[in-house]
Image (cartoon, rainbow, N blue to C red):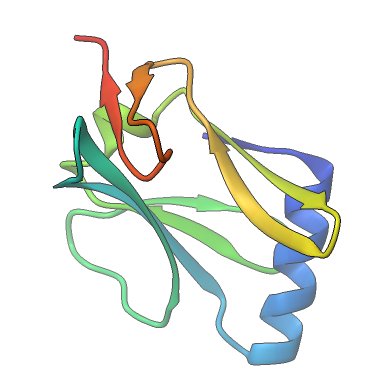
Length: 106
């Protein structure tokens, strides 16, 4: 898992502002083609989590999601008035038409 400088900067600001230091990143079965990405701020760490420390926050990934996310990169992008964290994953094989779900190569 890798983060761009923009993602690190934005996550550090949010961690300082909101006081939450952990970002849970994962996948769950959902949508048209297979899986949906999860990206949530949390205070909970589970026994099976992989923890990756960054400056003022930590990324946590559960063991079931790790194989799908191990090569992913998180970026923070702005498009007009919209801004969001975006997961860029070389293991993605396809996305559904609306972009809400993805399928992974085996």
